[in-house]
Image 1 (cartoon, rainbow, N blue to C red):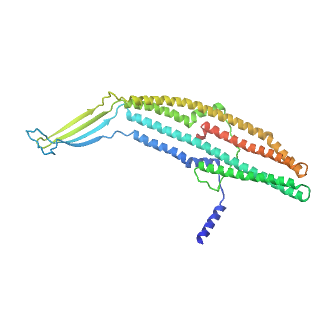
Image 2 (spheres, rainbow, N blue to C red):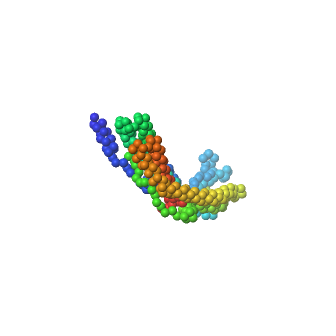
Length: 415
């Protein structure tokens, strides 16, 4: 009984809790902090830090201990067999790297870390655009739902008026049934709009890295008024700030450092060692040996790795050229989409909204007075609905175009 009561109280508390209204900026910040895919991309920076640490480490020295000429088989050491004497050996060797290998390794690793950072920024740029578009989708679905509810309420009033007119004998029952069917269609539109709102909210919460919650809602509207720079300014910002382009340029620098590293690896390292020997049994003496080992590069002079690094450098340069052209095209396309969206929005605002509203109001007034048919009212309502819906979609497309310009120019991650 107590458990049931507690559950009922908890359910009532949750039901009474006000919905959480999230702004665009908050949605973006939560996505940057919690999106699992972005967090996985960020882990590449920590991996690159470990690689920088590894690149700076020096080769470990080698210490060895050995016993030489040990009489373990019992043959004995004497003048006749000339065996022995037993020797105790301790040796120490270390490798001296030549050609600046360690410095080159560190340079390559640091460049790779910089590339990882820029790729993380590019992933954040893409995520920000996805969240912004998802937020716009929620706003559009919400406004569309409000529009559908408004139209459904309008036709509910028409049905009530027609019921009164049928009772008074001023209207045929067939006309009433037609108005009821029209009202039912708009009620269906409301249900479909509610489903689209829930789907848009779920997608947005997923991008934000949180579980879908029934109390989640957004705050804001589709209006966005930003000063837009000229296309040449957008192209310049994209060349200077796009993280994916900067990452390729930094990767080209890494490839150049990789060439220097492989050239350094072609130089042989020196193995420096010293060895201490202690003779036992029939001879007692101490000796010290100093050695220097130099590999003879008769066959492997690191030719393959040098050529690979050079080809990677050429490949990186070609990728930069390709991406620069692609980025320029993306900025141009985004700018043209903005101009088209702005033109459509201004066209609808300038006259279509007012005209559609006036036609509907006049037709509604005439219908209430019995001077126009239900078909004329439905046509006027349909035209008004399509105009308002087109206006909402034009506002959404205008907002998307501005967010796309921010993304393609790199402004989204450099504000």
